[in-house]
Amino acid sequence: MTGIAQESVAERARQLLEPVLARDGFDLVEVEWQREGGSWMLRLYVDKATGIGIDDCQAASRLVETILDVEDFIEPTYSLEVSSPGVERPLRKPEDFNRFAGQRAKVRAFGPIESAAGQPPRKQWTGTLRGFADGAVEIQVDGKVHRIPVGRVAKAHLEYDFEADLRRKA
Image 1 (cartoon, rainbow, N blue to C red):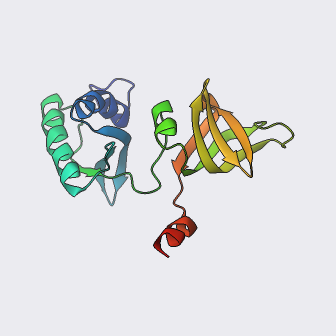
Image 2 (cartoon, one colour):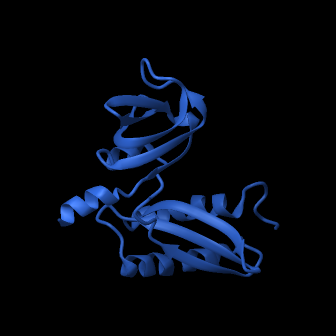
Image 3 (cartoon, helix red, strand yellow):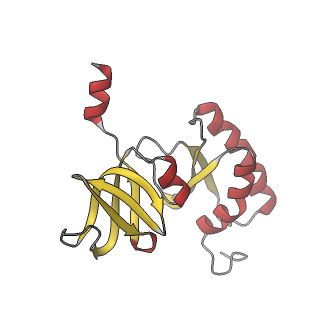
């Protein structure tokens, strides 16, 4: 693919579309560029502070289609999909960790780290997200708050709490 230099399609799409979507109240959560069943797919996961519905996804799709057509940086034929990030939404930015503080989350580090006094090193935590402070994600597991430096976070996402949902519905 020419015209993109060393940036991947997903990185270029994020750089191009994130500010435009933000202007219209959307948060670009994730961008995927992958081959599926012999054809290419550009998949955007978007969210809004008030939540996202099908009409929002359609509006975001119309907005980005025009930009992608004008910029024309993707060589192969592809399909565009704009979707909600779902209940197990990825967490990437400090704002994400603060916005979803109090919710159940799973955080995985690139390797074992010591994160709470008296605890053995570990690389995965599932518990209550406490937010982001001083360059670290804070998550409470079994009554102890663990701090994971943001540069060590390999992956983080909300984790749907089925039991809590059942209790609310009972």
